[in-house]
Length: 201
Picture 1 (cartoon, rainbow, N blue to C red):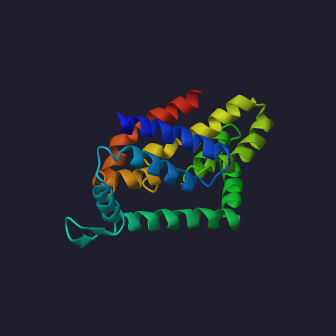
Picture 2: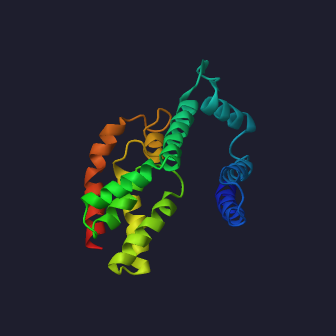
Picture 3: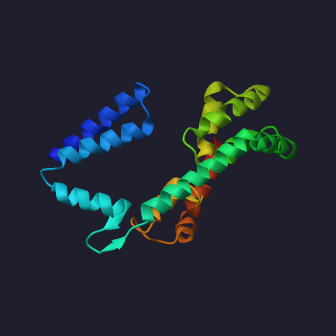
């Protein structure tokens, strides 16, 4: 029972700190510590320490070095570096300009957020929002519909994009250890359904 209370307390705690503009990573770390403290009745501190070591450095039970978490962290780091480089060098802006010449005025409202959806960075919808807003004004699209189009197509790749942090984590060795492309193949119908709904909207 205490662990459930801990999750609720941590959830409220995280929301409050985020609203106060605290660092997102530090907020999640503090939230996880709260859950850990409330779980001490069911999980011994030594087991928590072992799990922490196994997840980050060394498995005491297996007697070998564990690099899975480090590998995941490096993958996420390099993906984010690529995303920032594309934004800072203006490569993304040039790409959007090229898309405007290829796609119709109506479809560009879906294409712009979809392209930004390929950049797995937090708050990516905020990058595409000004562009969707500008193109939407030209077509007389309402503010509400522009918001829906931006958020919906920004996340349309969630089911099938193998470089998203969620897909990489789900398919990691310590989670499900399944082939990431097998998961993508299974989720293609979900992707198509989401695309069709987006077009109908």
